[in-house]
Length: 186
Length: 223
Image (tube, rainbow over all chains, first blue to last red):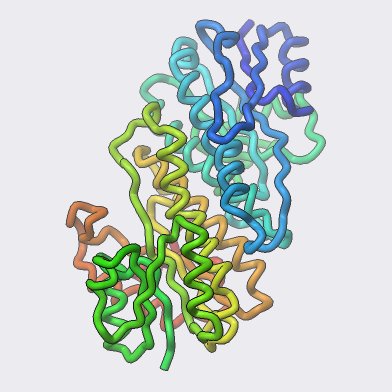
């Protein structure tokens, strides 16, 4: 029995993951991701004293279009939501994660990698997920000594929560893997 | 004669680009944020005031350059942020400040100057990346905001390369290496060596290179 925190329970996948872990007998804390700019970190009081697994899930969908249409205000909102807020929340959860030598899992998308093509112009999504990848890698390196692992899983559409839970459990520290556990680079 | 606009040209790497490009016979437009910076530019360049973190400033520059053909635009302006901050001390203001200059500014500048690039022959959309942008090379952490801003810039340039390929615009980021500048407390290689290497890269660029991040040594920066 472990304590699982789902950060981003306003998303469909977040709710599915919460239900999956609860059904499996784990204690589940659910936290929303704030959308304000500047962002306000979620209330962590519900997270308890120790966390075995914190999953960051985001159903954020940004508009796509030509570079010239991406305004600075929109870029800031995407930075807040997709990059800074997960990073800051993970950092705040670090003491709770360290108590159980747990792991922080960031759910991302293959489309955020540098090798993916971008025919649509996802300037308000891709760069900020990629930046979050960079920060997760930083934390993976820096938190090795505390026993906390930081993993990343590229989630396909309509993924099954049980399959995703397996992928999260098996993902290696500091790498981005697909649902089958294959490292897909950055 | 080829023409270029260099954003952030009054010191460090940008200033050395000005020197070497003038020597190579380029028509150079150079920007600085204030009068002191503009005064530091050679008389043989066309100086422009620009704060890359301010869209109004970018729009004013684009208006100044209306109808001017540019073979290349180099978004060189950048900041390191407070690289001494541990992860727990990085505020929203710090993260946003670094992204405004390092990531949003270059995208907004190039988007605003696309008409000038389309009037040019070589059509090079250039920016400055860093080894710190490389996630796979990160085995020591630190410098969170700077790293994230440059990784995001890489991703933006990848998207820009896809969008602008049909216009014949080559979108490439350059990696200067660890160079003696204010940002590095004057440690590292001599700036003329780095810029000389990057100019060699620029001279050899073609549309097929669009989307790459290339070092002063000609080597690709790993993602």
